[in-house]
Length: 340
Image 1 (cartoon, rainbow, N blue to C red):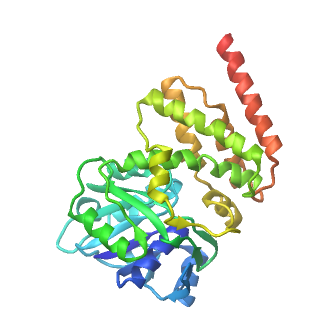
Image 2 (cartoon, rainbow, N blue to C red):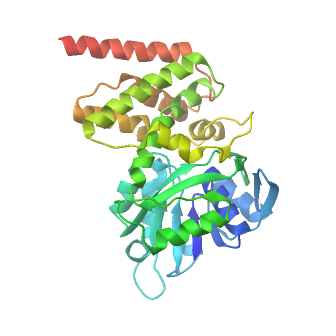
Image 3 (spheres, helix red, strand yellow):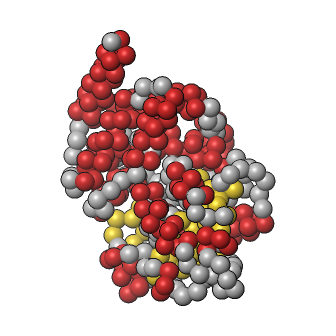
């Protein structure tokens, strides 16, 4: 199989680089200065094993690659806000022997949140979800680090619609296992992704107030998670328990001290102009509105993170006291409205 990594950022470049190290055939899809750096200087990937430079094929659009192969696997690792454009562009690409990628090729959605699978299922016949536990950093074009050990990451995967694993899922999992990951093939991958989403509700807190741990940040995240769990319960959505997640990770993905912020913080640091908050905190807000569950904390976090992105504010420029005060005000307004 040939892996086409659509969005060779922190997660995509790490997976692509590790697959290449294990002997896999990999194509990186990137844009702008990052694509130029990858083409000129190669991918500089640092893992717990050290730094290596991978000189891999790099394209920006499907046409640069030509007709796709029947054994291609599309690994979608762009942020969810960029997923529709990527799915449409690559879904329309022609495959040797007839048909399009959307009709014939598997696409694996290795992203935070749960929306990309739904977007992909509208377009692709073969869609798989991937729950990504892969702390990684991408702040400079062409340079990515993923320092967890003894495994680089854990990637639960399975059919997005649920059900037994097929040959493709098992083959991809085997390749990932050889490349330094653990890749459990599960029948309920979205249950794992909903659980991961709860942890990602704190991405907006990191982005706006900085990645440094503080009790007040943990307290605000706990409030956001409680809203998420209440919304999931009202919607009848199952998710993997904290105990299941802890058992799955136990001693496998140890992260060294001093690693910087998560994906939204990194997006702001790179000045991308957008973050994933609409599909993380916004997912909880959506479910809350559909099922009558108040979500004032997640509403505020989504809004604040988006303002930071649109106005190019530096990550961490807000105090946790100010962010908490906004959440308190939103909660009070909601309570007052409910009493009227």
